[in-house]
Length: 393
Image 1 (cartoon, rainbow, N blue to C red):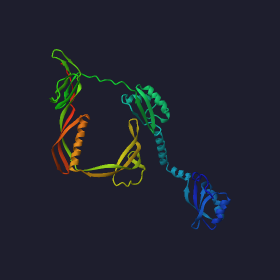
Image 2: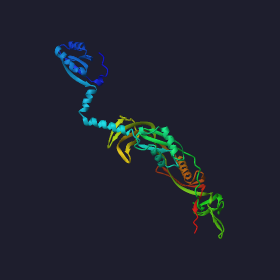
Image 3: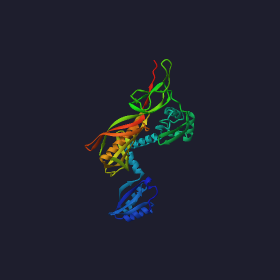
Image 4: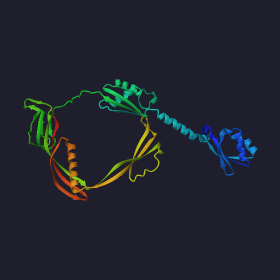
């Protein structure tokens, strides 16, 4: 016979029947309308499956045929429920955990504001709270994201567009600010002075009085463009503006190894996910070894929080990334070029990308302990002016 529908939900048992008239017993069961399936010989008898509801109807048939039966397996929901009922605390714990997890997943936990530069995030979050969007609010109580976007845009001045997106228990508010006229900073009266020793190569005074000329050698702190106009009796102070460039000398001590080892990711990775309960972590996915010869593991923790408290419940993800190491050996010429290039990049980063390296001179060079050591003097044309406020007595 075929297995009856919903046998797993109704519950069924596997029997081993022995006796002198096993075949007669099986025929009697079929004549009585009792459904059995997977009937097959087993040792000195037969094995068969029977619904739990029909189990006690076998007694008169067993007496009639002189057979005996032995239950070898119990399957289905009724037996699982009975086993679970014997562990009431364990069952209650699983139920409470499921309910708690469901409640936690139905709440807003974090709200992020992105795209704002001039408008404070607190102002946007305050407007969102007035519309019912705030941490620990039920997700199902939120309005449609399109309606929320329009209401937030009307509540916060200076915003031209707002987008609201929900990802799980996190809300992201994307903001596009309206264009505002640029406000000019208030400037105080000042001189422009040299920030270092240099030889002036270019000077342009937009406002103020230049007091040095091209090819003048200046010291650190010397006035280049004065904010004082007039003579000693009639003096007017202004905000000195302009640009002054000069030749400056920078001395660098450079050290470059001849052999270097670098690491890079191959793109292969293996993730492992854990459910974190306090100090315990139960692995959910990602079993087995990665098989990587060399790897680096990054850990990400996403713990649930309640107001300012961090709950001992969350998810931890371990990302094992495959790493490969490569070694390279440089010649002395390559090391020299690499060191000088790094020094030039440092100069441009410190003194401005518009600086110009006029010349370079290696003052000293030696090779020792697998490294190249150099002392290099650079002649750089760069901006040398800095502000000095004028204090009136």
